[in-house]
Length: 85
Figure 1 (tube, rainbow, N blue to C red):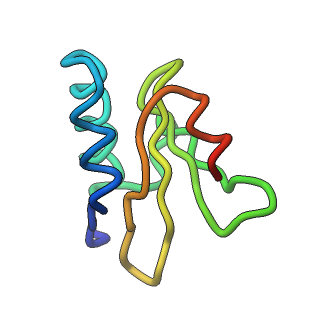
Figure 2: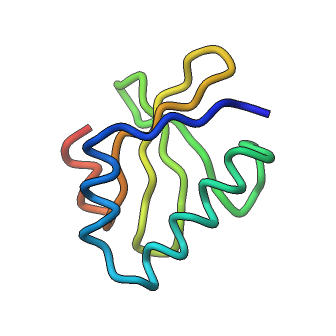
């Protein structure tokens, strides 16, 4: 099971989400911790970057970086957060 690290920017963005969106993100983090390859996460690399994207819902994404057996959570929010990565 990978270690999960939440960055300050991730935590700040998480606090800005609605309670419903926060529930989706928390569920995604649990799935990432238990099985990063879980099909519902639709995990895939962000083209041209070292970062990865997981779906928390149709419009909410979690951006992270894989370092060995560690997942560093960088950002979460609506699909437009991808523009930063």
